[in-house]
Length: 226
Image (cartoon, rainbow, N blue to C red):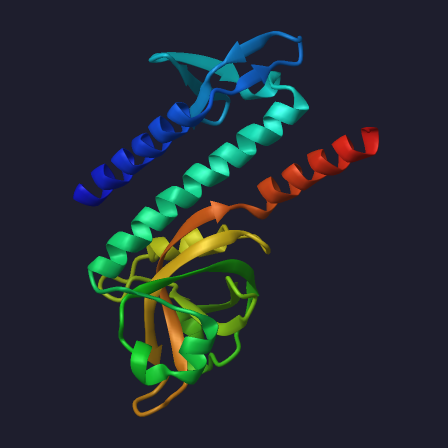
């Protein structure tokens, strides 16, 4: 609860800071204009704030330029939230992993709780044999530096009650190119083995590949129309 409250107040601080620096004029497809700074958004509408008053604008009504501006605001707010979360996790003793750390410095990261920001690439059974293949789903990812790590796994069933592991559905729903924060713990494949597997306990979407593609499509269409 404390973590969620801290993240909420971080977002409020970000929005308040943006409002003191500038005021944006939003233009709708109809030509109507509204002045106010981006505060937050849902799936269908955004909230802008001006002089302490909230105003809802439908996302589908935004002009192309302001739809792109809204995407930039949303991404900046999301990154601020991710940065705040990372700061809190570091303070709690967790580590941010990279592919090179997992491959080259297993003694530093083995059995440590932490996370890796990167992209989901594909499912794979590399390194999974026999019982491992029955209980684990393998996949590979790329970290923020575009370095690949091909030995990520998630349990197919909860080891304690033999029920489907909740993290399995999270991973199964990922698509190639999704930007994701992967939480988990690197562990040795076998006792005394320097090669590690990254056991994933939770995933948190940063930006879906579909959303990124939609933004690029709008940018291309806008450039071609000019």
